[in-house]
Image (cartoon, rainbow, N blue to C red):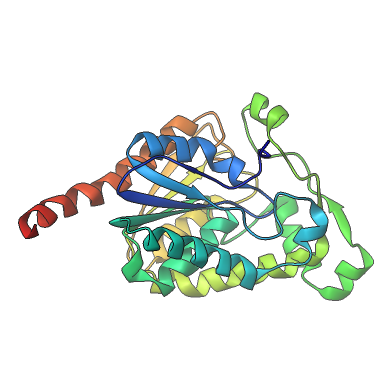
Length: 264
């Protein structure tokens, strides 16, 4: 029986969407978004990033290069299937990975959706990143409690698979992903939308605003969801989040369809 944190694919259509989850998360946190996109006609691929979903020990043994390689490999797999258009979604750290992939491969993507992109962190997440990215500190304190899941929906908080402890060694790799995304942001030429929850205790609004303002294809529209916390795709406005992303992506499907008919 597959675990709830396993990778999965949903939907069946000529357009494909690649969805990248966040740091210490899993494909589970993007399932409502994948379901909404699948209902809108997209074939969704939601990979499990290396070291995630199987416990804290594996997370300490991988890093930036592994996560980026996994994102590129998943994109390559969709292109190899012959999908006409590929769209990219990234949540939190997955948003940072998505920025970097989009900057490197503008010709392979039609549009980009960034959900609470972690260009800046706050609270315990910021403390984890900045304190434990120093090797000597992570050696002194090898593990820390992650804290409660940042989601407004209490049922989701009770039922979702959640990694309660984090290896501090992984903080340096998270820091590298974030800094790389900041550098890559102005190089992105793919049209984008940024989504953020007003109750987010992990990624501040200024991070979402920076992504929308400084992205090379922008300025991008920033969609704010007033009742949602960090876990946008799982939270109380998850259907609205999925619908917003599907609408944005569908604009590019419709725009290119007449040209295809004219050429065919």
